[in-house]
Each structure stands twice: as structure tokens, then as C-alpha cells.
Image (cartoon, rainbow, N blue to C red; front, side, top):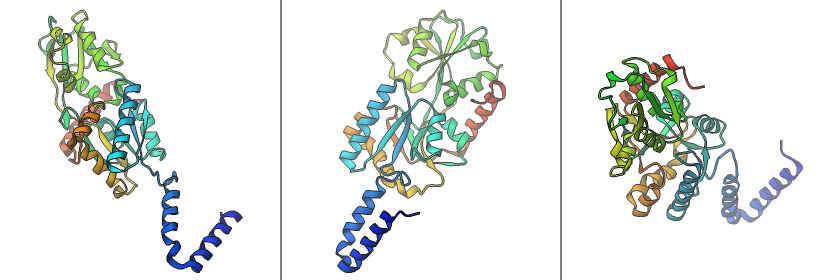
Length: 304
């Protein structure tokens, strides 16, 4: 319901428009754009949600630099918000506190009935990544079938990543990993060091790109790859399926162009992504991931 003040304002605008003709039209258009840009209903400027990486501070600093660059280079104003996990991230998207977000493909498989992918992320130059099972260089384990009385290291929060399901689904094809043998660490770097300087019975699950980034380091001298698991899709930029995709056309265009610019590449290096791609995930990749999730949930239970 309009207030008296609103009615008076509308009467003034109507009268002014009639008396001055088209001269006020440009001013009114600018006023409408100004008001729409501050309306939470339209979400302008778009707000992107990201999940904390290895460090909350580093994630925030990287995205602050990225959105500043996009505004300066493309004239597109973006906002971002860092979340501590996918549950709070997706809740904010559903309740329209944010307009877009980056989510792990494991959550896309779970929530795809109400979200729509806009872009795929590129990590280490690839649209997919592998999980390596690593052991100490002098470990007694040389085949996954030999794994007995071992301690599996996974990154926390474990149930929020496809990288959690891949090793457990793979190892579960031999026999499910006892819950008591799983240890959750805060970062992939901690997994590398935990296995490298452990007692020799530790098995770590890390993404392939992290192994490649650490080539030549002293920590890798104490490690070897026990198994390379099937490929997993990288995270996705998604929106609500109920929204108009055209609304985010300029954002998609700007993000897609970053990896083609030298300064854009440098800024992306400080995020967990090396670029963005419009390529869609093949259905067989989603089906394979869905099957991994089903197998793991059957034994360990779905994320709470």
C-alpha cells in the first residue's frame, strides 16, 4: 500500500511529465536505474558467494582484488561474500541474499532441481581434476588392495566436496573404510605434510593440481602416488533456475575474459581458479559423480 508521501510523489512525477513532455524522460530513466540498483529485489549489483579456501583472509583478499579489476576494466560492479561452507552458501542463494555462487559439483548433483549452471571453473588449466591417493615414500602399501590398518586423511569439511566421495567410493569397492580410520585435516597442505612426516600408515587424498603445484618441493620427496582416481568436475558458478539468465550476461562475459588478459591471469592466480568456461558438464560425468555419492552415503550417511 502506498503512503500519502508516495502518492504525492507519484502525482508530482505524473504532473511534471505531462507539463514538460519528453524533457524529463531521461531524468526519470536515470532515477529508475538508480533506485533499481539499490533494490534487494533486483539484486543490483549482483552479489557472488564463494566458499572459504585454504584461508578465509586470502579468499577475501583475492576476490576483493578480482571484483575491483572487473569494475575498472569492464565497468561492471560486483559484490562478493565469503561463506564457511556450502550449506550457508546455498541457503543465502535460496533466500536471495546473493544472486550467484560457486559450488562444488557434489552439491550441484544434490541441488540441481532449483539451480542452473552459468559457468564452469578452470583449475590448473583443466575442467576436471583427479584425486591422488598418496603415501609415504617408504610405505609398505603399493596397491590399494593391500590397504589394511591405515589412516585416511581427508580435507575438512569433508562432506562438502566431490573430493571426499571419490576416494571413499573407490576404496569402498574393496571394502568400506572404517569411520575410526578417517581423520579430517583443515587443509590439503596439512594432508601433504601429515603423510610426508607421518609413521608410514597414512594415506592422503589430495587433488592432482595441488601435487603439480608442489613439484620440486622437499615435502614431495617423502611422498609417492598410490593411486590416481577417476576425474571429477571442477566447481560451478550457478544461479537460481527461476531467475533470468540474461540478467547475468555481462558478468559471465567479464569472468570468461579474465584468463585471456595478462593482468586478469595474475589476479586469478590468487584465487583457486585459473579461468572460467562456458562448456557444460557431460551427463555421464554427473551420473558418475551421483553414483559415487550414492555409494558413500549408503555406508557413511548423507551430509547433515
